[in-house]
Image 1 (cartoon, rainbow, N blue to C red):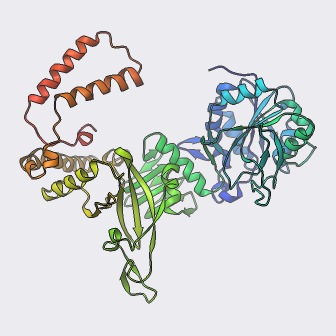
Image 2: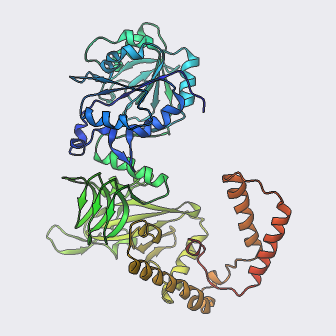
Image 3: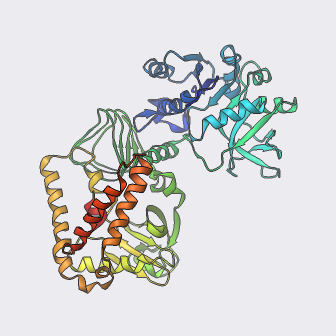
Length: 530
């Protein structure tokens, strides 16, 4: 990747007051995201496009930031600018003027997680003649930067607060905490404490180009409180395709887990613990039960269920009425008098439904919870052909002792169904944590029993489920699978050349013929390939 002649400035002096007690132990820039400090994640991207020095201002927990820098890959490029008192977003730049005045530089707040094409940002700034290029997006509740049709900054409402003025009608965008500046911006900053927005507006009024560059839709997370920190951790976990992370030196006894589990370096969960949706910070040592929590060395922070979800899942949460006939038979609530009553009997009872999974044909699965009762709601598109199959297969497998979530009730007209909630832990996630030999063997024996039941009992009675009996993995389907694998994985993802494709196709043709000629049994394709 091409590098550009830019320096980097990372504001890292703040107290992180809204993140206490977490920041009583670590400054925000050093908060780990699956073992990697936020500031390191930022530099992993910026250092690929910027070849210059890395300026970091420090105040709170400065010794820890310096210690991290000394062992980082960029130790010879980092220059510190201490502040006492803290100088603000503008004063910090002015304080580092001795370095930043020599050439263009990029500013990236060290508590921001952002996924954009930084090379495109830098190229736009260098080719445009801008004095400032602000990375912005359109978030109405944060949009306080007023711009014209060309993206020129005209004003900033409530500087520093990211709070728009609802009485002022104008085109407004939200600043992400990232910008590229030319050294000229420094002349518009006073000595001492100031906000960077002062320079934006002053430079714009003086005729300099201070432009917003729109990145609406890009991933952005301002790690400002425990909920947004948890969101950043779980987004990274989901991006890696995992639900469990075990950091270096982390230890785990015989425990029950469910949901998202993160053990940062040096943390420990002791025998007998039960944890669900839990982040253990470095040095944490815990036992007992924890659900929807961040656990530190001397603190436990409780969060809402929706806060302990990746962004995609949290964004799709919704409310459902437990008076709906689909839910009413399976959820109970308490009346004002304290007597048990069926949901919806007197007044509507609402519950939060949180997205927990996605399926083919835009199928969605939500967890619905009320007074200790949970169930999984499946919603399908009206034309989804698999809705009926899903219900038929579930009933058939349950009848023949194949372990599947129980079908509680269904709404055929609206293509909805309610299932028993068996949790989120897969066999793969279960085995991510250390397990003794006996536990692993016992688990696999249960798995193999289920597999044998599929191949024997379910197969012997498959005529009782016509929708399944007609679902034959025939020759054409087998060839489609192998072609898909070659096109999407071998040549698509792995970029591997197939030297003799006709010979390979001939081999796959014979393989498909042989498989199709074999006795037919019921299989679960995803189950058997993992």
